[in-house]
Length: 323
Image (cartoon, rainbow, N blue to C red; front, side):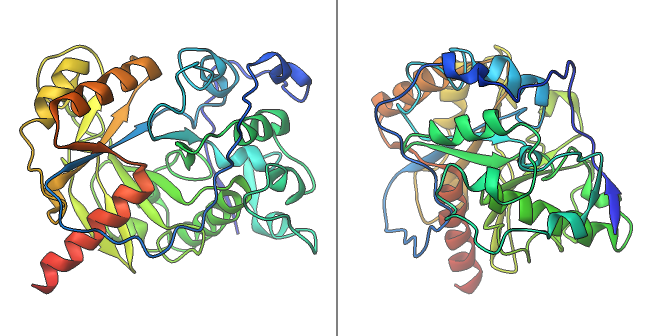
């Protein structure tokens, strides 16, 4: 089964060269591991915020802005938990048409998921090996890579015909595993549980952040933090977008974000006690740090990795349904 997946790429250039050797090296390297088990949530009066950086599905951004000090190469990176959207297709070559028979041809021995070279040895060839290997080797304890919308390439799973949805989900799972990812960002115009049915049964996918592509004023958060559980996998919608400089609404600046979040419940046992915030390229990593510090100074907030927030909010949703 073959299918088409779009790879946003304004200006593609070959990067199979040591261009990333000039970026800042870090003394302490903590590589992301997928296995996150037995996350328990205690009773606490706190509102949990998780930031996810957008547009990592765009190969041009990954080659340019992503590696500048505005984003992944910021000297402040690691200050607080952030998930970086990153195209899992970087782990395989020629992903204009994806053939699962090719993707399934892996070596007999695959390095551990935490290994920074796993992505380069899991498949015979890779699309941008230096970029992916460098990004994984630079992860701090507060960084994770998540699969951009909607997995292997920019696509709307709700539009896939039967059979193609399964092929897309399987290819996405394979490449997420090779890239050390467990959270996938899915985008859709009309929210649909059916469009996720093949993705949530994949072993590499532990949680989903669901973007909406609707009214422009709502950004990606038209579902305003809605939570769903499918096959034990939490599906959580962003609550707000760090996008522009408005003081209120769905797309806000740093102060607007802090003000909007201040109106939310501080209760770890409620689904409304969690907020996923999408950070668009209109803001940088320093803005995320500033927002996090302002929330901490206010009190009653914590910043968490999106995968952990999703698991906890899923637990709150399940508890609510069972009560």
